[in-house]
Length: 402
Image (cartoon, rainbow, N blue to C red; front, side, top):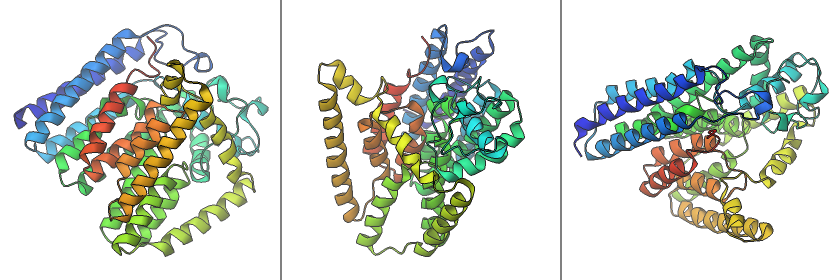
C-alpha cells in the first residue's frame, strides 16, 4: 500500500469519529449515560461509524508501515482525532462523575473518600449522575488521583457538565501526550504516533469518556522518555505518580527493574524513593491510614467479571467459574514469568505485559487500552502491536448500547 494513502485514511478516521460523536447530541441519546449509568435505548449507527473509523485507521497504519508520512501531518491528525470527542457530551460511561464524586467528598463534603462511600453524603451533587453500582463503594483510585480530583471538584461546583468536560479534556491531553511520547521512543515515529493518536477506540473512551487510564498511559510513557533522556530521577518520580493514580503500573515497573539490573542500566532510585515518601506522607495527612485500603475494593472489583473478560467467555463455554479464573490466573503467572525472563535478557516488553494483563483480568474494560496501546507503540514490538489491534477489535463494541 502506498504511503500517500495514510493521510487520507487519517482524515477519514477523523471524519467518522466526528460523525459518531455527533450522534450523542440527539435528544435522549443512549450514548450519554443517564439514570445512574443504566442505559436505555440503542445506538447501532454509532457502532457502525466506529467500526468504519477503525477500518480507516487500519488502512492508515498499513500505509504508514510501507513508508512514513509527514510527521507534522501525522501529529495534526492525531491531535484532531483525540480532541474531537471533547466536543460531545460525556460518552457511554459515568466514571468521570465518580471521579467528581470522590473529589467532592474530600474537598467540600468534609469526608474521606477512602473510608466513606458517596451514598453517605446526601448533599453530594454528583450522586444523581454517578453510576448507581458505585454509590456504596469507597474510592479504588490512588491517592495522587484523588488529591487532584479535589480541586477539580471545586472547579466543577455543582455542574455535572463542567465535571464531565474537565475530565474529558484532561484525558484528551493525556492521550495526545502518550501519542507524542510513543513517537519519541519508537524507531518508527510516524507509525507510533498514528498507532496511538489515530486510534478511534482510544479517542471515544479518553476524550469521550474522560477515563483516567489515559493519564496512566501518559505518565508511564513520560517515565520511559525521561529515562531514555537520562533524566533518571525525574523518571522515578513519574513512576511513583503513575502508580499513585492506579496500581497497575507496578507490573511494568517490576519488568523495567529486572531489565535495568540485567543490562546494567542506571535507575532513578533517589527520585523514586523521594517521591514515594512525599506521596505517602501527603496521602496520610489528607486521608489518614485509609488510603492504602483502596486495594481491597479494587480487589473486590477485580473479582467481579465483565462480560468481555476472557474468564467470563470461558464460563460461557461451560467451564466452571472457579476453574475459568484459575486458568486465567495460571496464564497470567506463566506469562509474567516469561516476561520476567525476557526482561532478564535485557528487554522489558511492557506492551506485551499490558496485553497479558488485559487478556487475563476478570474485570476488563475497553478503556484499559489507554495504557496498553501506547506501551506497545513505544516498544515497537510487532507482537504487542498485533495483540493490541486484536484487543481493540474485540473490545470495540463493549459498553456501546446496541
